[in-house]
Length: 324
Image (cartoon, rainbow, N blue to C red; front, side, top):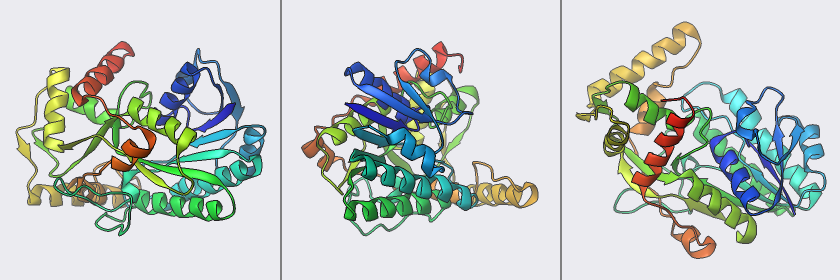
């Protein structure tokens, strides 16, 4: 049995590849010529060169495969870059779904909790509509559109399941992606954390949930792969404790949040390049992105580990690989 993995050099995809190899399964990865080679070094994988935006290269990569994990995506929380994110997140998903259908393969699409509505600590959100409360930034828009594209292909006969992970940390974060938040807390004192909070999980647990979805996920069904519910303030304090950095002393107030968002948007207007801190990102960080993984726990056997252990493992990996 051979599994094709897109986004295999990213945090999620790389952990999925390693888990599949541990299980003794054959793995083929779709990777661009310009992709970082380090995540795949020493791994017994077949590399198919191509791009999810190129339907022909995706179809060639999918020939003869049994299963597909589609984790390739552009992630940027902001107002700009809609064209690029649609090309990768939406049309890329369409290309992979069409190729999986042609190959008769089972597909797991890695979406995000950002495609869902917003919950609370008392009432975490689940997989059902209404999808309300999110800031409609380009990432949220394109992840929702990608799910719609996938479900259209399911109606045409594709056996596909959607997983919606929370905010992930863990080893093999080469870029780094979400781990950059941990590194920033460790490197410099940031006195004020964002107001909101989110569901935080270990990427290795998410990878296990994805493989379980390959094995037994129901067609056309969503599964939230979450974890612990933390405010950003508490999360940053944990990062500081593990990395021996300086913990924040409070949460950003409304005036500071407005000022930071306006400053980021002004930088975008002046330079044409949107910084990570912009009004969309500030708006998203004000929300409490809390989600229930009950369905995945019941149907996929999804389990989560202690978050402090996750942060320690992620920090140890960053130290061992020269990031910290």
